[in-house]
Image 1: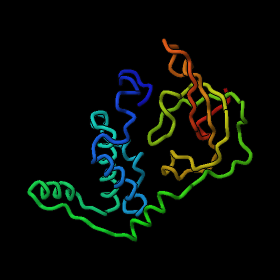
Image 2: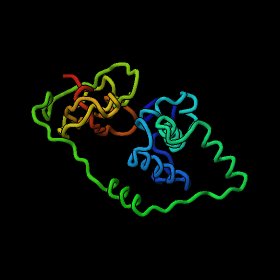
Image 3: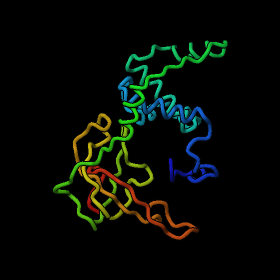
Length: 212
């Protein structure tokens, strides 16, 4: 929600901390393992965008992750409806937290987390470094990786990162297309303010751009 009016400053005291509560780290780990072990269905990021707006705005960052992780497990059939609530009741009643040690899985997951997945090589591209471009302004019925605050803004291509699937479809299963690093002047995106102008850089898929 960076840059949206009414939500306060983007940088807040303590925002440099990775986790503020132990459960947040466990939630991140669970979300990661659901993807690696293929026991969930769908993309966590896209599913989080399906939350009721009031719930989404009220929830903290990792509360949204926890919600989407449970949804992915439900949609795959890995857990049954009501199973999580039943476990909460059992734990509150004093039942011990179940534990499972699986060195083979741990090694497999460590390898998957450490694996590199570079972007593909970009051949012929629509835009060259130095070109002036404008981010398209359109309504999205589903997932997109265009930040709302930059739609319609003009910037300059400063690098061609490579190629990757268009994330809007699938998501992350769309056609392969170039990804560009676009530099924007902060005044062009957010308007002039009391602080000096600074540079904002975003990596954007080719479909998100048009000639300025």
